[in-house]
Length: 72
Length: 240
Ligand SMILES: NC(=O)c1ccc[n+]([C@@H]2O[C@H](COP(=O)([O-])OP(=O)(O)OC[C@H]3O[C@@H](n4cnc5c(N)ncnc54)[C@H](OP(=O)(O)O)[C@@H]3O)[C@@H](O)[C@H]2O)c1
Figure 1: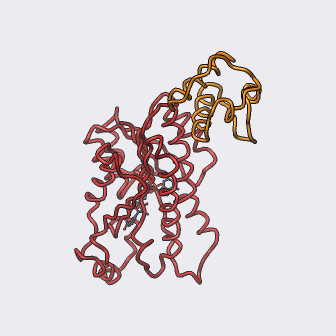
Figure 2: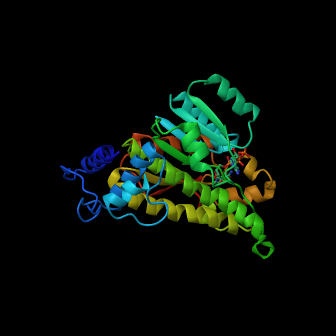
Figure 3: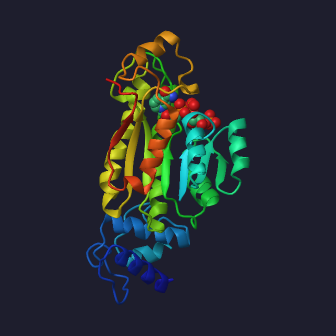
């Protein structure tokens, strides 16, 4: 699952012409470390939802990679 | 191109389906009733026309019933036309809150939720899609008895402009087609005198041709309008 989320994050980053990451750490902050803005986070949500059928932002704010992984 | 259209059982929605199907679009159409005309169209285009019986008063199941189970996340969506609407018309001193809430649910809230999930679908497939909301000239030119209906359409126009701003950098567009008076069931309760008064407020002095509205919607859905977003396009016989 972690590997798949890593892939999804890099898909979102490259779709938006942002630098990809080389490894995934659970303490990474989606906005500050990965450079995602609200539209990137929307795409991330949708891609995760399509695979795991959970909307990671549905109840409350998710800030880090670890929090994303906990939701799915 | 796959296009979702609400309110396809009659009037403008039905006509729009017809011209989109003729132009080889795939259409996902939604309404509560299946009219004979709708059935005819479904049998003419068994592969490219899909229909769902759904009451847009029910906003809770839009994701599950429409986007997940019916369209499916594998199918890309290129366009959404928020056309279904009801018109609760009365003078404001007679306002009935239940009727008003129902109208806002269908005309405004369902349209917003459909937009939410259509954009999410577009993000999943990297589609630079187009959303068209059907508004009404009553937003811009007051008519007695239409204040509540016009308020729903004014809400849609404001929504559309802001969605256009929000999603423009991804290439997703949102526009309103501001229709003038068309001869459909929605307007069938008007007397000839009322109709003539409406026509007299237009440059062309006649009702708006449904064909002209539908062709303009097709233009806004297609890539021919790639540089148009956040706009209200009037098709209203030149209402002045
Ligand atoms: N006619 C005019 O003069 C005029 C002028 C300006 C703007 N407009 C706008 O143009 C659009 C089309 O209007 P029209 O004249 O074609 O109206 P219409 O003939 O009354 O058709 C309305 C369509 O919306 C559908 N609908 C209504 N409530 C629904 C619900 N709860 N759930 C699902 N579908 C629902 C109806 O299907 P079911 O009943 O089968 O569900 C029908 O297919 C509307 O947005 C209207 O506000 C019309």
